[in-house]
Amino acid sequence: DIQMAQSPSSLSASVGDRVTITCRASQSISTYLNWFQQKPGKAPNLLIYAASSLQSGVPSRFSGSGSGTDFTLTISSLQPEDAAIYYCQQSNSSPPTFGQGTKVEIK
Amino acid sequence: QVQLQESGPGVVKPSETLSLTCTVSGGSISSHYWSWIRQPAGRKGLEWIGRIYISGATNYNPSLKGRVTMSRDASKNQFSLKLRSVTAADTAIYYCGRDDCSGGGCYPDSWGQGTLVTVSS
Image 1 (spheres, helix red, strand yellow):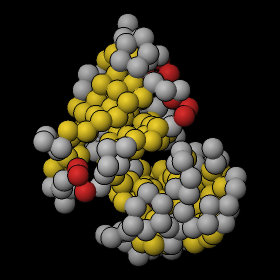
Image 2 (image 1 turned 90 degrees about the horizontal axis):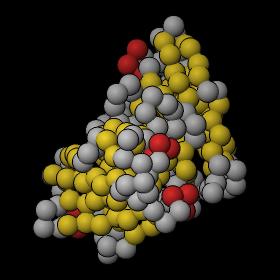
Image 3 (image 1 turned 60 degrees about the vertical axis):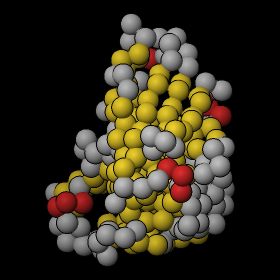
C-alpha cells in the first residue's frame, strides 16, 4: 500500500493567517491526490481533487499543489469555520489510502 | 443533489457479521461507483473498505482479509456492506460514499452522515 504522511499533525493559527499543510506519498502518485475537510461529528467533505482542482462550492481560499510525492494544501486566509481536521488521500492505486490527518485550530 | 444514508444495527457481537445498507436519493446507483469507508470512533484516521462499480464488480481492501462483501440493489437504489467475523477492531463509524472518477483516480465527492457500529457482546 502507498503510505501517506501529513505534517504537521496539528497547528494553531489566527484568523487571516496563511496556513499550509503538507502531504508526502511513499511513492510517486502523479497528481492523484485529494484533500478532505472533516468537522466534528460530520462526514469528510471533498475540498480538492487531482492535486489542484477545487471542488464545486468550496471557497477559493483553499488551494492545492504538488505532484509526484509532495503535495500542499493552502488556506490563504484562515477563517473561523476552517477549524477542522484535514486529510489527504491518494487515488493512484488500490487500496486508496489516507494521511493521518492535520488538526487545524483557531487561536 | 445526491444524498446518501447509512442504516443497520449499531451493535454487533464478536465473530458475527456486520451488515449495513446505504440508500441513495437524488441519483441512480447505476450511474456511479460507490464506496464504503470507516473511521475508528473518536479518533483520526480513515480506512477505505471497498468499492462497487457500475458493472457490479467489486474491489476490496486486502487488509480486511477476505471478510468483506459489497452488493447493490438497483430496484431499491441501495448498496450494501457485509463484514464477517468482526472483532472489537471493527468498531468504527462507517460511511458510504459516491465516487467521482472524472478528475483523475476515484474519490468520494458525496458522503453519508455515517453510522457508528460497535462490536460488543
